Structures are given as C-alpha cells and as structure tokens.
Image (cartoon, rainbow, N blue to C red; front, side, top):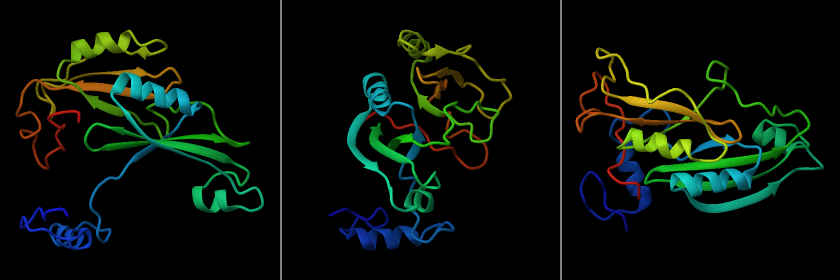
Length: 202
C-alpha cells in the first residue's frame, strides 16, 4: 500500500489521489501527472528496437491491431480515417517517461515527418551528463542524421550553461540530447522551476 506524500501514512490509491488533488489542484479534476507521450512511426518494430537498443528503453507491451471495418469507431475514437488500422507498443524510458509508439495503415495518412517549423512539429529531449560522449555515441548509430552541435546558449539566456544538439532517427523523427553545466542549473532558473532530470535512469 502506498504512503501519502503529505502525511507519510498508508493510504489507498483513491485516498492518495484525493489528498494530492487538494494541494495546488490544476484545472482538470484529480489530475496527477503526465502519463505518456505518443508518436506515430512508419515501422513499429524498428522504432521499438531503436529506443530499446540505444536509449535504454524497456518494452512494456505490444497491443493491437485495432480496426473497425464495419463502422466508424476509428474516426470517433482516434480521429483517423474510418478504414484505418493500427497497432501500438509502450516503451518505458527511465524513471518517469512512458513512450507510446503507433503504426498506422490508412488511405489518407501523411508519411512525412513534420519539421520544427511545421504545425505539429515536435521532438523528445534526453538529458545526459556528458554531452560530448553522447554526441559521439549518437553519431555512431546507423541511419541517424546528426545536426550541428553540441551547441551552447547565450551567457545571459535563462538556460545559460546548457549544451544541446538535435538529431534525426533513421525514419526522420527529431530527438535532442541536452546537458547543463552545474548541479544547481534547474533550481537556479527564474520564475517557475523546470522539472529536473532524474538522478538515475532507473
């Protein structure tokens, strides 16, 4: 049975949720955390292997295929073409991140990854302690395209001391490695604090 983060007492998950909700409650009732981030990939098995082999991912499960050949459930539930089919995998990355990967077959789907400047452009940023070692490793992954870097930021920027670079997976999804100079980096940011990286991967 979990312990309440407020009192340390043993509480049920339902009671725990209610207690958490009473402190700085956001707009959505009982909201507790980000559960997962999801992206669509062209080859589910290849994407799972990429994150497991190179980024310490742990495959949690596969699911599907999902379809509704006699109705429009796919449109109503997932906002895709009614004839679409999909399967998915859940990959855990580190202590707190669940990455849900989808592979679709649909007659109207785009097969081009959005750029950063496109609506829907996105990337996942990974924190590393040694950005130079990370850069050399990523460069060695077959099929990966590494952008210019590692890059620094202006000394007067809110994230002064940060170094980073972008790279593309073999299927064109954009990722980032980032690092900072000191232990107090995240605590020292002005205003609301960024969520800091975990002290260990798992």
